[in-house]
Each structure stands twice: as C-alpha cells, then as structure tokens.
Length: 270
Ligand code: PGA
Image 1 (cartoon, helix red, strand yellow):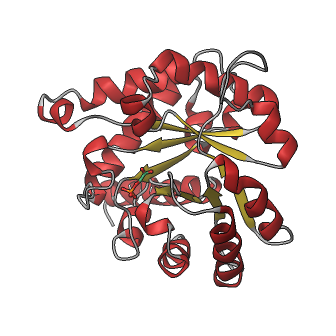
Image 2 (cartoon, protein in one colour):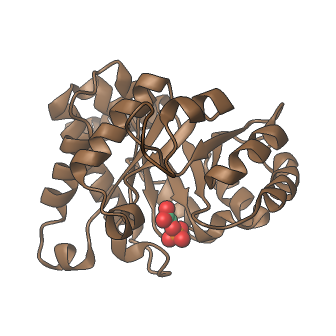
C-alpha cells in the first residue's frame, strides 16, 4: 500500500468517526397540515414504526397540534417541535407565540427561518437571529433553515448566500449553545417541487456550512454540529442523501405527512 493510499484511508476513517459522533436527526415539518385529532391518529400510527430508530425522530407541527402531539408522543422516542415562534418574551403581539409558551407546553425543537416564512412572512436574517437567541434562552433547540433561491444558484452565489444566512443566524450564539443548534440546508428550488438536490450538491453545501461554523467557532464545534438536508427528501432518495458525510439528517415536508413514508426515511438514517 502506498503512502497516499494510507493517508486516504486514514482520512476516510476519521470521517466515519466524526459522522458517528454527530446526532442524526430526522424531522418532519408538517407546515399547515393536519388537525389536532389527525395529529393524535398520526402519532399513534407512527410510534411503533419508529420505536427502534437509530436517530432522533422529531415532528414539527402547527401550534394548535402541539398539545395533542406531545400527549400522544409521551413515553415514545418521538420528540415534538414547533414551526415558528416570536422573539419577544411576551407583550402586545397579537396572534404570536413565545419561546416560553412553547417550552412550558413540553416542546423541544423549533423550526426557525424556513424559506416559506422568509418568503411569505417577511422574515429576514436578522429576525431569524433574534428568534434563534430567544429559542436558546428558553431552552428550545432551534432547527435553523438556510438555502439559496434558484436564481442565486444559477448566478453562482450559493456559497455566499448560505454562508451569510448562517453567520447572521448565529450572531451571539456561544460555542456551548451550538450543541443545541441544528442547521437545515434547504435549497429553496427543491422545496415542495419534487426536485431534490443531488446527494453531491447536498453534501457540498452542508460541507460549506460546516466550514463556516468551523471559522466562527472551531473544528470540534463544526464536526459535532448536526446539519440536515431538506427539499423533496423522500422514502426513495433518503438513504443516498443521508449516506453523505456532511448530511446528518433531514427536514422533511411532504413525505413526513404519511407515517409509512416518514418511518422509511427514519430507517434510512443508520
Ligand atoms: P418538502 O419540504 O420535503 O416538501 O420539499 C421540505 C421543507 O420545507 O422543510
């Protein structure tokens, strides 16, 4: 065996070890789907299907479904997340929900800065940052979404866009808080379109995000941060995407609404 072979194999072994150190998280993002009673039925169907999971299993559901989701998931390995929150602690913000309210209910995760919220509800990198800080202060685990538009990919600025989103989202986040943060790379052109990023594209951009975290903090923090891919992940393509070095899980929209499909994705996370 030549020296270069030996070095290559050593690097591969290091990669394997680093990937094993990271928590794989498969999270459903229901968006505006399912009523509270449908939530109870869904969780009772899902729980046996994922009871042997090798990864963290999370369902992020509409505010009104949280209570039923938490009750139905009690005593199982299914964790519950919200899809949004307000960054203020309390006050005159009609229709909004605070991090403390979610925490008190028993919510563990919260999706922040999803592209639909950036697109339809005017969320910006700065408001995403405020929400991340509010979530961490309340003891919630943020799933922070970043990702480029199709025009940005075509213009060759994916790296700049995703790096900027990541850097701003993490302003004021300490390295010890980073263990509670998940970044979800979701190319906007792949969300709900059936157009999945190739496993190589997903791995490349998740790797870019890991590089940004390494520069902001250090290599250890970067190597232990969970970075998910999201965008038309489904029962068929999950195992190829999840097999990539930098892809530590998935944020799944459409395919998380059927317990059978979602549980196949969970089993692909080995
Ligand atoms: P999708 O949505 O899986 O339906 O593309 C992913 C997401 O928006 O998180």
